[in-house]
Image (cartoon, rainbow, N blue to C red; front, side, top):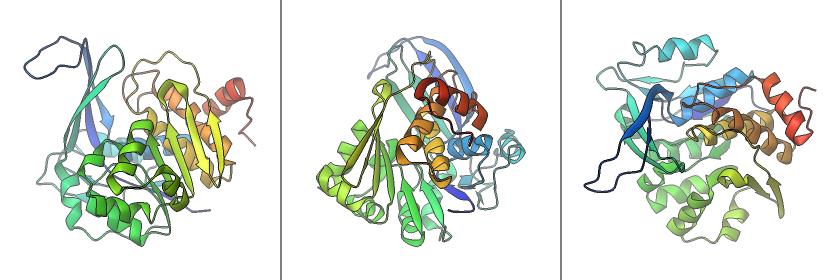
Length: 298
């Protein structure tokens, strides 16, 4: 098992808005409330792994306000390895503006900032890496150079060319996607889901409140979601990935990895913000015991 989990992708400041309705062209609706919080898919995952007690490394581009915003000190304080950051002091930090309506529909606007310049950088070779949403060329380079690759196409899927996406898929061991993203992936590379399963060892598809399914080696595992009072779905997928990957590197079965990922996600949605309600391993153990009858404390 790897000494450290490397996570590639965005480090962002998130502006999270709860709105009455997602506005269409030439429409305006009230903002119910909003929060500014630490985010970015890669940073969310490393922060979650660190709080859970795992060893992790962030591979990301950061801007001039990464330090002044308090983000750098926070990640250092929880034990995230920041030695692989690409610091670009002439850029504003990556930012996400996320609008969520009362039915949990979302609309996101993203300022790429330093992330856009990763395409010109030659990445390191990594032992165990998760590719979160990031610059597609950079992700493709990482996938080709690394020993074990986990991949999440995410909402940035529209920025990939079919060629870059196919290169990553052909070098991927684990893929995470929601039910919409997996269809887009197959359409973009003109593959059937059956062919995708032949190429990638483990595929995890999330189905919102319906839970998730793990596809591997002709076997399917269905993981029910834990019923909680969901305040904000933002970051739930990142929490799932963090829990799953840490459990995987600790040698848990795939089914139990899914249950641990689902449990971590259940904490994230209970508060607004991707990193405002991160559980530790003991928290996850207690909830796993309650809902899945699963003891993960050893």
